[in-house]
Every structure is written in structure tokens, then in C-alpha cells.
Image 1: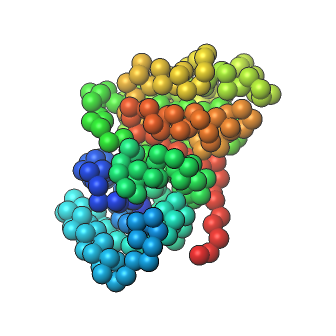
Image 2: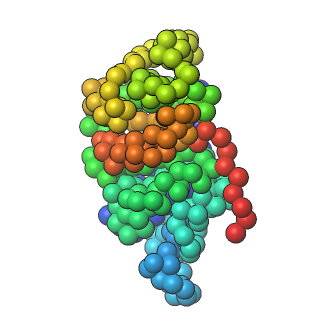
Length: 276
């Protein structure tokens, strides 16, 4: 099965986050990524009106990073922009028709503002394609038997995340789908229907394990991430009912901050952005 990602847009802030992103890009290359667009956004908080000198300096720094990636066999373009980071990254992802946006988390400067605060949630709502948040730590420590985990609510809105998960599964030895039952508490979707949905998924994803777990969604999902030693968590940006609020609010933020592995947020549907 073909990888869902061929072209990745990478948010670059020239911080210590870069080695982690570079290492992830090498791994994504093995998953089918062929093209990269490196983007540096100059925020008005840093420079109100960047001049040619600042823009040229950023381009030169991106070019140096691009050269190392090109040696891996990747096709690399660079783009320097200014403005609100989340809006610019989302627009550029749409403009370049990227399949994925890659950002570090717990970074510095631009990435710190993007991923620690409201701008991160703005980007999850704006990005027209999946958003991969890479932790700045030694991920991949469980590489002997890598595991991919899907957090879903079984709704139609979660379908894009489930399909993305299914297309990535062939690159992982273990695959598990998890539904936190408390997320269904206020919905018409029953626990029985949730189980039926997960059983149905096993017909389309080979060697798929699944679980329904009790407890508060954040704690339950983090517990299963640890138990399965997951290398990647996939979840939808928009659910329905209670899960919609959790995945757009406190649970999503908690998972981004606390998950020991990368988090892949998948939009429920394409986002149409206004022209600049």
C-alpha cells in the first residue's frame, strides 16, 4: 500500500529542534516521502517588518539545511515568509499542496509559540493536511517491534484518521486501535457500536489489535501508549460530540505535551483557506 505522504512541509526555526526533525525526515523518506518544502516564518513578534537582509539570511540558512537533505535523495525547496506563524504555515501547506506538515514540539522561538499555546490549536484547525508533531527527545527507543496506535471515536469524522492509520500500518510491526469509552458517554454512539466498529476495522487492517478503555480520555490514552510502547499516535482533529471537544481542547493539548512519541493529527475534512 502506498504511503499517504509524498510531499512534506517542514516548519524550521533554526533552533535545537532541527536535528530531531532531520532524523524524522530520514525515517519518513523510507516511508515514501520524496519532496520537502522547508519553511521559515518570521513572526511580527520577532521582527515587525523584516527587510531584505533578514530575508536573505533566512534563505541562506534554509539552503544549507536543504543541501544536507538533498544528499539523502530528497527533492527540497525553501520558502521564507513573514506573518502570523499558524496562518502562514497553513497557507503555504495549501499553496505547495503538501501531504503533511512536520513541526517539532517543545521547541524554541517560533516552534515554542506554535506548540505551547493557542497558536498550536489554531494550526490544527487551519492546516489543510495532516500535522505531525515531533517530540524533541530520543524517540524510536522501541524500534525492535515498532507500534502504531490510533485513538478514534468510530465516527464518520474520524474516518480520515482511520484511513491514514491503515495506510501507515504496513510500516509498523504492531498496530492497535483504541477507543476511550468515556468519550462516548454523552453521544448516541454506544460502547457496543464502538466495539463493532473496531471489529470491522480488523477486516481491513491486517494483524490489528483493538481496545476499549475506561477512565478519563487523556490518562487512558497515555496509559495505553506506554503499555504498547507506541512509536506513533494517530488521532483525528475533529470528532463528534464529547470527543470533538476533547480532541480540539484539553486532551489534544495534553497528548501533544505529554505523549512520549510523535502525534499525527489528521483533519476530518479538507480545510479551505482564504487567499492572503
